[in-house]
Image (cartoon, rainbow, N blue to C red; front, side):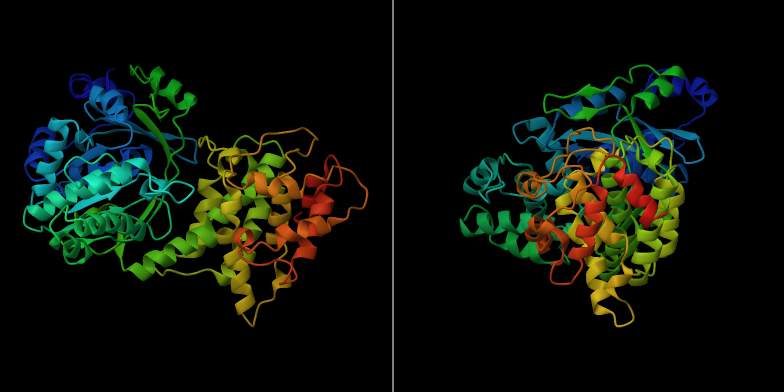
Amino acid sequence: MKLTLEGIRTQKAEYEAAGYKLPTFDYDLVKKNTYENPTWIHFGAGNIFRAFQANVVQNLLNKGIMHVGLIAAEGYDYEIIEKSNRPHDNLSLLATLKANNTVEKTIVGSIMESLILDSENEAEYSRLKEIFRNPSLQMASFTITEKGYSLVNGKGELLPSVAADYAAGPAKPESYLGKVVSLLYTRFEAGALPIAMVSMDNCSHNGDKLYAAVIAFAETWSNAGLCDKAFLNYVKNPSKVSFPWSMIDKITPRPDAKVEAMLAQDGIEGLDAVITSKNTYIAPFVNAEECEYLVIEDAFPNGKPPIDQGGIIFTDKETVDKVEKMKVCTCLNPLHTTLAIYGCLLGYTLIADEMKNPLLKKFVETVGYVEGLPVVVNPGIIAPKDFIDAVVNVRIPNPFMPDTPQRIATDTSQKLAIRFGETVKAYMKRDDLKLSDLKLIPLVFAGWLRYLMAIDDQGNSFTLSPDPLLDTVTPYVAGYALNADKKDLSGLDALLSNEKIFGVNLIEIGMADTVKAYFEELSAGVGAVTKTLEKYVG
């Protein structure tokens, strides 16, 4: 069976016999509607977009609730479009990996057009400009990762492509966001038409990050006389151009070889992954968990697609912020980081397998239900306890999810302050709670120190996951070895007092001694991590 429009039409019976859900809407009519009156263009056609937003739109097309499909655009790695989207007629195969050991297989066909965001490619860029000039366009959305919104390098210097765009103006920009702002300028020139610019990336206050980048270009071009000065007012006017906040949550790991083999066994051809020249790993299928959340600030000056009928939630900005804090500070991310740290120490290679360990299961349940829930930010539209229930009972234990503690342990120094420090600070503000009630969050901190030794519980060395502060933090534990002798742990104080890492000064609030005592037990020798968990968690 071939993953093409002709394939799913001529081999419909074979697909259905193999258990695949196929698009049921009038494809040709929806494609015509989309080309003539586009409503939604998405930049960054990666796994989460194909597994989540595109599938939501397909369900609504199948039900007759929507009549216009999606347009996907890629501005970083053009080979994604050339080698994945177009050879398969913009179809993709979604393998939803369920916790009950079943796989739901769907051919997603809601993407009607895929384009390359390249100002040097006249045909592609002209079509993008045509889309942005169309009054029907309601939303341009983005999943380009948090760093995709940055205009500077690690030293705070303008990226060369951005500097070139600042100087040259909107005619033929080089940078990703320069090209996006140039298209927005095209919409302004077409009559200052309204649009929502919606970041759907998994980062805090994502709409503000996109707004800051767009404003930087608009101000620079306006001040230099490279564009109509009214363009800046257009971008700043929320009744014309809005930048809603959103919170997205759905795990879509890299395409897994086991899933590929299962799909190939069904008889589908051409599922091999492609590694592009920019080292992007792409495949015509996506494996994803079943749980998904997308909450968007309801700020759409040109109307919005009825995606709320497909499970996406529209609400106010304050509620979006609360949902994100609930997820990041209490109900998901802290549990993931706990499992990442101790999974690396205990030699696990799958997050799901960790939940088979009663100690680790109880550890994350205590961090979430016992220590986190008393101070959780409750958004009202999603019950925090229900969210944790799904995380602990469905999402993390999912045996099909090929997610690793090593991946989640990436950049841990950047995560501790938000994922645990906010809970610590909340306890400090409450008269009815005591810091001493926090027993296992300090054990997470101590576990991270033990992790930085890069020696597992069996005494074997392992490779630390990437982290921008590794060179800064690893020297603090370099002098400690696995042994049962008493240690002088004062060398850890400078690290434990770092508010940027922990969110609070652990020395000042009196938690450092607990962390150091845990660390001493965790590093007492081979098997000490397990023994410490048995003592304090079991």
